[in-house]
Image (cartoon, rainbow, N blue to C red):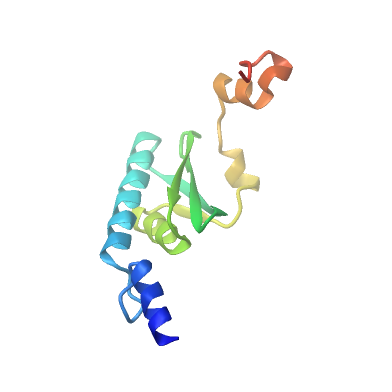
Length: 124
């Protein structure tokens, strides 16, 4: 069993001892840079909410101070949390209430949400 555990750790790019590997550190740094760039482009601060989306992936939903929003995807919850914290994003447990009320949508989002029912773009 020890051999299996060691092989699993190597696949996850986690050296013995449980410290993150270089690949995870690079991904964390790249995501943190993207979160900081989003914040700079949308009012200087941003809120973030983390959500599992399947196959170990985690969505980082971002909402800027100006109400614009966007998503990033991380390979794990640890990477997503570390990136958001490193970038200085305010983490929210849920995407509801006051945090969700900050989101501003435009004509594009409304037409996509309504789809073909209210004259939005055809789904062809």
